[in-house]
Image 1 (spheres, one colour):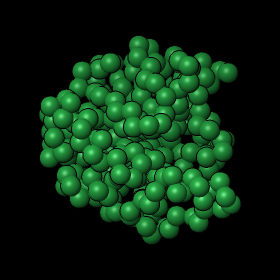
Image 2 (cartoon, helix red, strand yellow):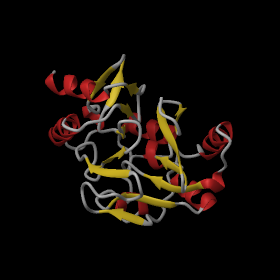
Image 3 (cartoon, rainbow, N blue to C red):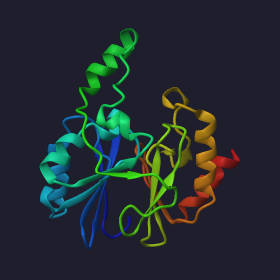
Image 4 (cartoon, rainbow, N blue to C red):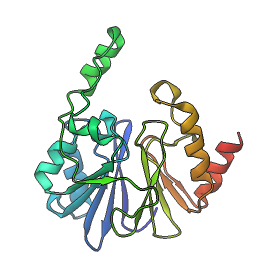
Length: 221
């Protein structure tokens, strides 16, 4: 899709690797226990865990931060997340106890997420946490959800779960796992006002070539 940008499909979750002049940047980490798969993905692009310098987190859900503690320990990389989601990642806000049979089954399938430190907090919308990446606060799915815009090849949006794709169409996040669907809709509309050629998602296939138009269609309905 874009030179130096790679997508790892880890079951139903996507993790992204970006090769930069300062090392490899990882966007999200998948479910618990996915470090070996990420290490294998790095080897396929002739990189190693030791080259990972930064881990950008879009939000605190377990399918995105599940392997963060392990990867942070093994790589020494800086973990960066929004201040509003950081307490859920560090353990300052403990995870809610699963409710009902389905909730308990889902928790068993996901596994246990180990809390870990966040090395750098995102507090300002539009800030540049690392060179070349703009942090866009896109709340709704979670309070501290962040999408990242990479200044490369016309712009690459790492949407996280602020948007997804299904059958080539961009959609908003599923309401059932979204804290504030109204704010999520506003965040999707905000992304549609930007300019970017490519978009990748936490769930669903990438959109390449005038990707922002797919966002505008999603907002227009």
